[in-house]
Every structure is written in C-alpha cells, then in structure tokens.
Image 1 (tube, protein in one colour):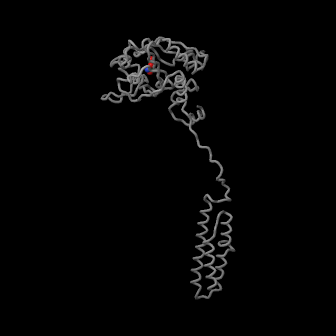
Image 2 (tube, helix red, strand yellow; image 1 turned 180 degrees about the vertical axis):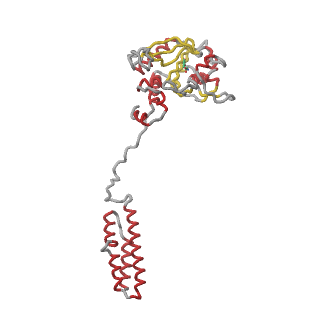
Image 3 (cartoon, protein in one colour; image 1 turned 120 degrees about the vertical axis):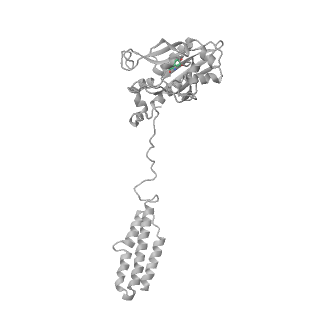
Length: 342
Ligand code: DAH
C-alpha cells in the first residue's frame, strides 16, 4: 500500500503547485482529478487490492485526498471566474455603458438665457435670501404696514418676532443691493418667490422672477424702455411687438406693465394670451424716491429704474407647456426631454 500513499502525496503536491489561469486549465484539472476516469476514481479502485486490516486506514486517506482535490477545484473555479480569466466571453477592455446624464430644468434654461442677455449689456448678477424680514420685502419698498397694496401679494408668514416671511418677490433684493451703498448699481436678481395662492394650471405657490435695478445719475424712462426693448428682441426675436401699459406699484413712480404680442397664436387669440393677443411679462417703473431714501440713497442726486419679470410664463411659452404644475412635479419623463439642451 505504501506506493499508493506515496502517489497520493505526489498528487497533492502537484495540486498545490497547479497554475490554473483560465477555464481551459480548470477543465483539464477537473478531468484529470475528478472526472469519471480521473485519478480520484482510479485510486479508489485500488481499494480491492488492499488487505482487509489496512482497508480502513486506506479509506480515510483516500477520502481526505478526494476532499482536498475538490476543495482546490472550487477555489480555482472562484478565482478564474474573476478578472484574470483570459478566455471568458466578457471583454474587459471595452468602454463601459455611457453614464445616464441629467438635464437642465426648463426653468433654469429660460433663466440662463434671460441672465445672459442682461449680462451682455453690463448687468451683473446677485442673489438674496428666500426667507426675508418684513422690512426688506415690504416697508423699505414703500409698503408700510396696513398699506392696501400688501394684499396684492398673499404672503406666507413664518414668525411674528422676528418678523420673518417667505419673500413674495425678488424686489427685496433691490433693497439689499441699495443698502450696500456702492453706486452706480446695474444688477439683476434671479430667484424663487412664494405666494399663498391656490394652485392651478396657471398659478403656483412658488415661482421664479428676475428683478432688475439700475441706479445712477440722470437715468430716464427712455433708458428703461430701451433696455426692455432690447431684452424682448433678444429673448423672443425681432418680430415680437411690445406695449407698455400704465400701472401701479408702490415702489415705482411712474409704473408700467409690459406686454409682448402672443407668438403662440400670432396674436390671433389663444388660451395663453386669453384671446387678447398680448401676454404680460413684467412690471417696471422709475424707483420711487421714498425707496431710495429708505435705502440710504439721496433721491436729489440719484434716480433709476427697476423691473421684475416672471420666469414660468416665458418658459411655458417657449416650450409649449400648458400647465405650470408640471414644472415642479419632477416627472422624469418630462424632464428627460430637455437632455442636451443648453
Ligand atoms: N415685484 C413686482 C411683483 O412681484 C414686480 C415688479 C414691478 C418689480 C415693478 C419691479 C417693478 O422692480 O419696478 O409683482
């Protein structure tokens, strides 16, 4: 029996040193040691030639060898199915699937376009907080407590002491810019605003505005009109008509609202322009002297214009979106349509 035990030892050494690199090597190993005509089976067959008193001992040794060969096989199998398998059908040198890219939100696309038009004519961009105090949102803008015009903007109040609220318009950022005291000012203030309104296809409790402010010596209403004409031409194209309507805002005097001809229906009348052929896009005016005084600017020396425009309506016109709510629902089927748009 000794020669068989020697053979087992030699085979164990062979297994220990085996260099199995791929599926082919692994299969060769399996056939040589564990196959139906393999060495394990063959050595088992020697059992019948062993004398009965040695059978038990031999059986134990044989079983140990079988387990050893099988364990090694499983180890080799695990390591060859990992990365160093040269014959595998997976080509690890191929580039990976492209990563899913997100898209810019249509609101942001529209804002970016608006911002870049003003940047090109010398306006810089600044931002202010969405949580404001009553003074910046109302008082400083010539809207003292109990002023009836406060009702024009249904406010979400946060606390009484301190008197915090969610800003109802980006005009509050005008106040912050003027308080800084650096003149002249030629800035725009994009951002989100909040109103306690019933949500519908046309109105939401939050939306976006871009505010503009120009303060210098000898600024005229003609400067305001020309700036806004330029904006409309760049934004909507040269064919769009513009009209100013006299209006009222406590923080400007005189005040106006600006409409553009409805390019959805060519001014023939549709649900976007409510069948009047014109769409209101902004409010504007010459900054009220009280506002300048409230913000520490001498109204005898300086004056200026301001405007505030909504972003949602322009976005909806630009992309043919009929319901404002879809802009904040985060439905990927909607958002994915803007992939690649810059
Ligand atoms: N803040 C106004 C609103 O939200 C819009 C506005 C009107 C802003 C006239 C201005 C302005 O700067 O001069 O309805």
